Amino acid sequence: MNPSTAQASVIVDELVRNDVPHVVLTPGSRNAALAMALHAAAEAGRLTLHVRIDERAAAFLALGLARGSGRPVAVVCTSGTAAANLHPAVLEAHHSGVGLLTITADRPPELHGTGANQTIDQRGLFGSAAVAVEFPVAERREGQNQVWRGLVCRAVAQAEHGRPVQVNVPFREPLVPTFEPRWPESLDGRPGGLRWTTSAAPVSMAGSRVDFRLPARTLMVVGSGRSDRAMAAATVAATAGWPAVAEPSGLAAALSGGAAVLRCGALLLSLGELPPPLRPDAVVVVGRPTLSRGVRGLMGRVPVYGIGDHPQWTDPQYVATHVRGWLDLDDMSQVDGVDAEWLPAWRHADSGATTAVDKLLSEEPWPTGLQLAVELVSALPSGATLFLGSSNPVRDVDLVAEPRADLRVYANRGVAGIDGNVSTAAGVALAEGGPAYALIGDLTLLHDLNGLLIGPPEQRPNLTVVVHNDDGGGIFTLLEQGAAEYQRSFERVFGTPHGADLSALCAGYGVPHALATTRDELRAALRPAPGLRVVEIRSNRALLRDLHARLRAAVSEAALR
Picture 1 (cartoon, rainbow, N blue to C red):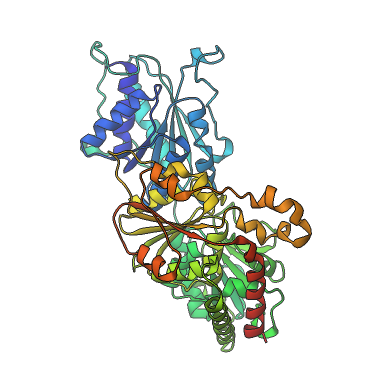
Picture 2 (cartoon, rainbow, N blue to C red; picture 1 turned 90 degrees about the horizontal axis):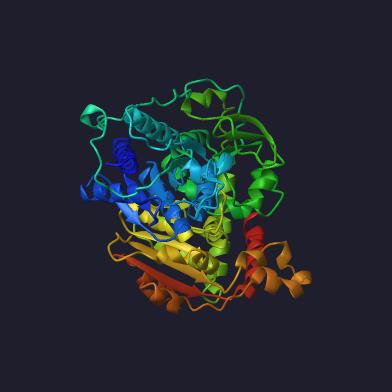
């Protein structure tokens, strides 16, 4: 075999040995050797190969596969702007701690700076967002096999610690198999299918003592992040009698740990200054909360104790007094007892808020985003997977949906972009295997429409994509620019109506589409079914700002009096 073919075959073999279960491939010329080696490995049943034609969608598909499988997943592309299109998914992986392997085929050094086609400087293309692993150009000489395998092991080891990695591989022609002299050394890996180099996980320090005391009247906030830390911290909250406010992506871990999760906790905190019975003496923040301004406001008024990754902990307001990487029952001696009135006061307020929410939404004309959030979460089958799109969908679920421990909830909250959400949801669905659902907005669908583009030979996810279509950027209606005094400019530069026919677009991609105009039609459309499909719900975003104002007023009157 020629050097490019030899190098590609070794890279793929070592990926398999490092337990990389899925690889997403986009077609190209410079990555031809990798494409052929991956195809051979997939046909031999050694890995699962997914082929997509859009690099950005492919990268987010790999991100979703990594989230759902819990293992590093690779995305492979050709050189030039193809590699640049992986950048949004790399950023999301970096900020959410997902091990994404981007394998970018490159031109050899002699073609750089010469005007050669599809040639850019790809070395360290993603900057600080990804660890860079640079391969040498393959040569016909001894000592190559161990270098190639060792570099793959280094890349996977970084990804296993939640770091995105760019593996940049320059290939010289020929890029496809040719008749060549015998290779000068064995290209075999370690006996028994072992990795070339096995790296040990870092030692946990979870048994260490804390150096601070936690008040009895503490409120726990759970955001996105490592589920093991969230579950351990939630167990402490349950034992100490602390109420918990959990964002959707941290909800299952918080409930599994036994925490008393409030359904309307974020909504209660959004009302501003709390009455004395609900006023905490401290807040314990687990993971990375990103959704609620009310949570951020509370963190600015009371001492904050952060439970997160060191040394880059989550504290954008610079208010944390102590930060550590864990909280478990060994730390209960550092908690100043249990206040018997603390949790009941919050439960009473949450009950009042829940009653007010349900009453208001029952009287509201169908559909609104808040009603859709309640209906969808309650209708999903037990054990289902739910992906929540950025902007309003994840916030609507956060504000009003009933907490459920039997759903696996995902969201791209690393940088919270609307790009790649369809592809990420598809990747999660493929990795999880069971019935999966996504709740996204219309702009989010349009931004990743190629996430629906799956070739006939490819495995299709069992994914129902529920699209809340309010013809534009509904989230901006709720922000400062949505106020009445800015209406002259709002619709064109923030509302951005598009008038797109989602049914026709889905038909063009060969994806079934249904329009649900009633609650009954929505529930019927949510029944588990194989394959990929889109369910559209249309609403009027002009009514959104008033609805949320009335919701806050009703909750304030019912829960905080």
